[in-house]
Amino acid sequence: MSFTTTILEWFKENGRSLPWRETRDPYAIWLSEIILQQTRIEQGRPYWERFMKQWPTVEALAQATEDEVLREWQGLGYYSRARNLHTAAQQVVAMGGFPTTLEGIKALKGVGDYTAAAIGSIAFDLPAAVVDGNVYRVLARHYGISTPINTTEGKKEFTQLAQSLLPPQQASAFNQAMMDFGAIQCTPSNPQCLQCPLQDSCIAFREGRTDALPVKQKTLKVKERQLTYIYIRCNGYTAIHRRPAGDIWQGLYEPWLTEQVPQGAVLQRQHVKHVLTHRILYADFWLWEVDKRPTLPEGYFWIKEDEVGNYGVPRLIELLIETLNT
Image 1 (cartoon, rainbow, N blue to C red):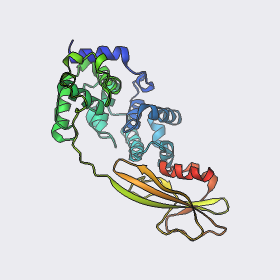
Image 2: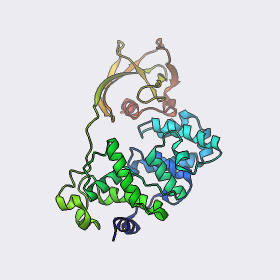
Image 3: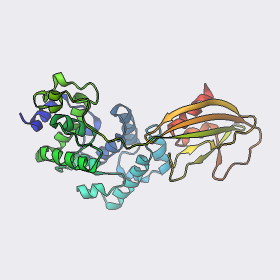
Image 4: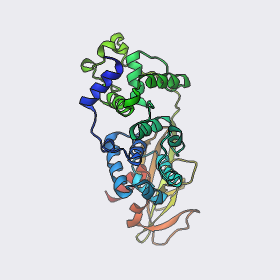
């Protein structure tokens, strides 16, 4: 059997049962693709379910406020995805409906080639191959390709190969099969090679190179950053502000961020390590209990402590605030 036929046959027996695969609604499919960027299915599925329950249509999501969307997104990270999701929903409404071409789908905020191909093939049967981490891995190993996947040359090579293998009349099934095959069978570590239906034709298996493929150039330089937070407690109120554009956690809320710890503050947590893609954060968290409201820096405002949960905060802040109650 050919590579394509083998993958499709494997998918019939082993494909994952997921709620967004039980519909052709482009909104539901698009929502799942955005949530699952940089997120495991087990973590993302409850978010998809909550979003679909709260905003069952793209029109409903478009009418929500950005704060509401960010609050529901809380804990998923990469918050630009949530902001882009909200903007794109408004774009779709302005267009009068979900675009049905690859070009139209890619015009939506936060949608790139991969996401457009996934939505287009699954919702509209467009013959466009998806190329994500799973697909890179399967193709690199099976065909023994050493071209780095994070280079212009590599992206072009793998995209052309995936497209050449795509059966035009079964684009949806093939794309989902490739994603599942990479997630279940041809995994990053400990791939199930001895039970793999492609074992006989897999170059990486034959040459003992499964651990070496795919190849990725090391280009990311991780930076470290120190943060000092003061949680002010004043007669049932606390102070927060909304993070500005151009930095991490744009649009989310946080307690007083300062370099100067006020006299009388009590250290709650010190040097909490929080790892993001491009940086490592170290946070100190102080509790400052006062009877009189201090003067706050510009942009900060008072809220009732029991209403903190109404504001979208980064996961790090959520963890720090939890220490106040332990």
